[in-house]
Length: 135
Figure 1 (cartoon, helix red, strand yellow):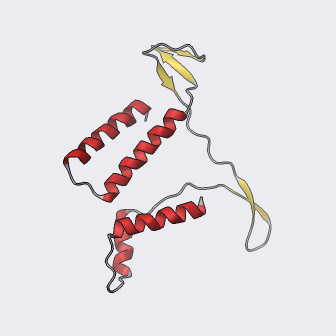
Figure 2 (cartoon, one colour; figure 1 turned 90 degrees about the vertical axis):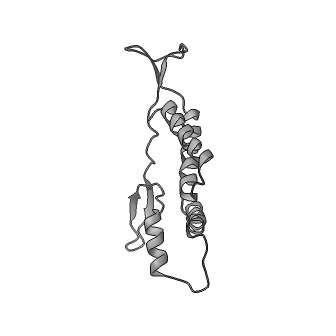
Figure 3 (spheres, rainbow, N blue to C red; figure 1 turned 45 degrees about the vertical axis):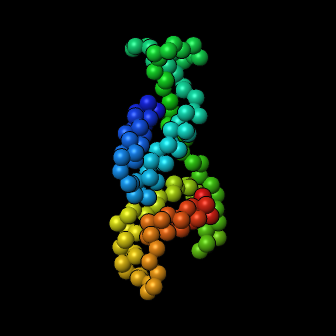
């Protein structure tokens, strides 16, 4: 998805936020999109498209489409195996949070008497702390 399409999607989602009381889950996704736009805007384009021609230099006109490369995957690192002690290649994986269905399923399986937080906000706070510790 290009930056302009992401901005249009963000504009639509913010319009929804302006007219409805949106959930924490929805607001979190809006913030994720906002962050993705900020990161994409920091990237330098690798080329410009003018009609059917690619230009691999800095000279660009107002209507030229900017072309980007996807971010490079994380480099493998060497870590010691906890079982045998050998050095092994480990490719860092991106953080993947829980879905709302997973959160509610876990909450249903492990009820705590007298404790009734906003389960999504509570889970989001725990996930954020885990993400900070593990990435």
